Every structure is written in C-alpha cells, then in structure tokens.
Image 1 (spheres, rainbow, N blue to C red):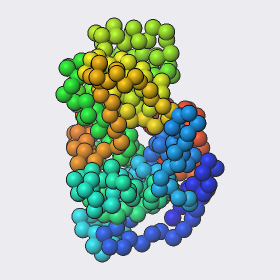
Image 2: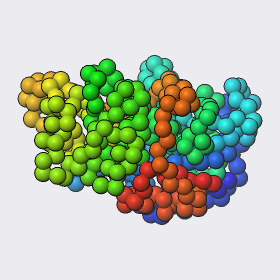
Image 3: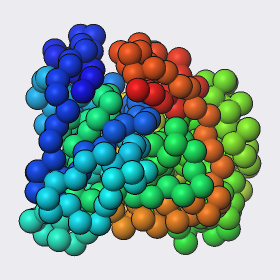
Image 4: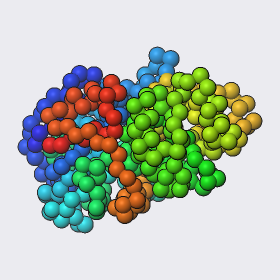
Length: 348
C-alpha cells in the first residue's frame, strides 16, 4: 500500500509504503481509483483553522502520521468476515463522515455531526493512497452512470453543496439565490441550485477566471464584490435583496457581503472555512429577521438522496484537474495558492 501522509503539520507530504490492511469484522478494503483534493485538506495539512484576530483553532483528530483525503471512489477488493452488503468487485463511493454510532446524533442519522467522529481522511487514514479501509459496507454508495473521477467529488464537495442548497429550499420565492465563491464546491452549489431550486443562482467571486467558470456552469448573473458598486448591482439584479445566500468561501468579507445582500427574513448559510471573523450589530438580527446557519457536509440519508439525482443525470459535471497520486503534495499546494480551477483529483 502506497500513501502520502502528513508527517509534520505544514511540511511536504511524505510517501509511506506498508502492507495492505486486512479487513476485520465488518470492515471493507477498497482499492482507490480516484480521490479528490479538498480545500479543507489544506487546513488539515496546516494543522489549524483561522479564527481571525490572530487566533487559531487546532484541527481535531489529525494526529500525524495521517493520510488525508476524504473524497474517495474505488473497488471493493477484500471483506471482513461480517461485512454483509458488499461483494468483491463493487465499484463504490466511500462516505467518509463516520460517527461513533452510539450518540444521539448518530442514532438520529446525523453521523456527520458526531462529537467523536471517525472520519476517513481526518481521524482515520484516507484517500491520498491506493487503498483505504472502510468500517462497514453501509458507507459505500453506488455511482451508476457517473464517470469514476467525477464520482469521488460527491463524497465531499457534492454532499456539502447538496446539503447547503437543501437548507434554503422552499424559501427562495422562485428567484435566484446568491452563491459566494466559484471554486470546486461553489460550482457544485451552482449546479445543485439549478436542479433543486429550479433557478440558476447569482454567483459572486473576486477571481474573474472563476466568474467565467460560473457563467459556463450556468449562473444567472455574476458579480465581483471588489467592484465599488457590487452591492448596488446585487440589489438591482435581485430586486432589493436575495432570499438566501450560501457562502462557500467562509471569509469575513464573503460572509459580510452575503449577509448584507439579504432581503428581510433572508438566510445566510456559511459553508466555507477560509477563516476570519463575522461581526454584525446584534440589533440587526431582530430588525431584519435574518438568519445565519452553519452547514457542514451532509448526512448518509442526504448522500443517498443526492446520488439518486446524480445517477439520473440531473447534475452537470464540474471541471476536473487530474493529477497522479505521486503529485499529491503539489496538488495540495496548488489548491492552497488558488491555482486549481475546478476540482483536483488524484489518480493512483
């Protein structure tokens, strides 16, 4: 088994060779055919999240040496003695957001919000490798009619965008919502918004190249928040304010632009983890009746619902940048520098 692991936070990933894991109990061994590189992998590699004001929060669960990578697709090659529901040769996406299985959140079906997670690629070795151990077949999802390299992206960017869009479903009033950020996850958000809400969203980004990608993805309009009249432009396009904004950047500036662009009673859903602080006068919340909600990936049930939509051909693909597994560190650094247009995929 070949993997590229974080040996020391903030230092280049190192190749580690070891025997293939042998699945025990309900475990399943998957030979990885493609693995996505997510922007959260950058924060996990750095070892902290930026809280703004010079404050940093250590990333929980990543104890080096650790193979990152939580967007995984592959072939089942070995089964533990109690691993029912899977068979050798199955081609599956790996759902990585695994909980303890015992707390009330897990029992309610919200494993992705478990306080003691067992997440693949964070708490457990992940997809920057050629094999991965999955604790149970229930975390394997079929991806009928979807290209393999694209399929892996639905394990994080897909489910993240899908769950965020579902949180504003029914409140858009038949008008476009605002999507902040046209990176890999934001572009997924554009496509899911078109399908689930029935309206192509407005997209805001400070990178003109990414705005062009948003146009190609079907955005109804694009805005660069750096323009002095950006807020007036948004108000004109939306008729006075959007009902909802999904912030896939998660920076101080993006959250502020999204919040201030809402109509009365609007909702801001913050997804991104870029960092910084978000400050608003407390009185603005009751005076505008606006809501701010966080959204982190999605549940196993949402994964199943999403894959039915994707397998039915209702979601257009996002741009992919394919790299060799041996280029894992270079791909991570290019993503950190903002050089990846679309979604980076490692191919073992």
